[in-house]
Amino acid sequence: MRIALFGPPGAGKGTQAALLVSRLGLAHISTGNIIRAAIKAKSPEGEEARAYVREGRLVPGKLVRKMAEDAIADNDYDRFVLDGYPRTLEQAEWLDEFLDSNGTPLESVVSLYLPDAIIIERLSRRRIHRETGQNFHLDFNPPPPDIPAKMILQRSDDRPEAIQRRLDVYREKTLPLEEYFRSQGKLVRVDAVGSVDDVHDRIRRVISGDLVNDRR
Ligand code: AMP
Image (cartoon, rainbow, N blue to C red; front, top):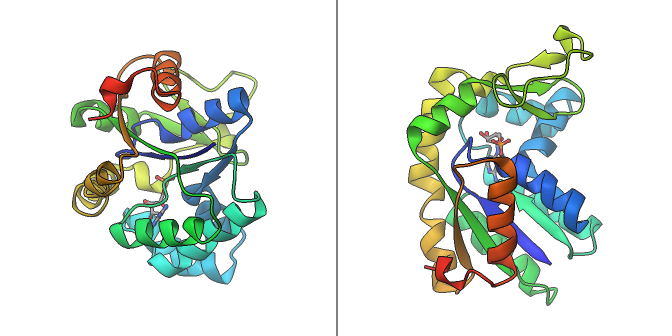
């Protein structure tokens, strides 16, 4: 199974990818996580990406392309869920070329959608674990009390100015991908409002083809 999840920041891509990983045994390939790990490790790629991420801008495509392709190849080109890649038309074309040349094209592209007000609320209340990167929400999924407070951080790009920038970037650069994948017959749209389990069930139904109506 080869799936890409896409949607605005705060749609729950990371959370849903983690569930697909634990319940279907897929590998989670998140360019955001790979980039954050590179920044933390102060690698040359991380140093190049740092300011872009902090400001909520897209990291230069070539850098991300290599990270995504290496991760896909490391996973034998199959049984993965891509989270946050591709994010531009250029990246979508690179990805198609890369996977097609291996005879393992993407099967489904799941587009998560939700209203802006919910996005902003989710992102401003999101916190992450300093080391594992696990996501929490201060109200709906608070960090357990045994995790020391100093291990719980707010992402620098979850602050209000960066959130607005990320939403603008999403609309301008990423949303056009819906049309690109729709024309390939691979796009499935999933309502991302609701509990984590409800959204997971909707994703499972659309990727198994039960909810064909959502292929619009
Ligand atoms: P995410 O965790 O997916 O929200 O990604 C966090 C940040 O990493 C984004 O705001 C971008 O700065 C950068 N990033 C992640 N994936 C990509 C990508 N495919 N292309 C460019 N930048 C990316």
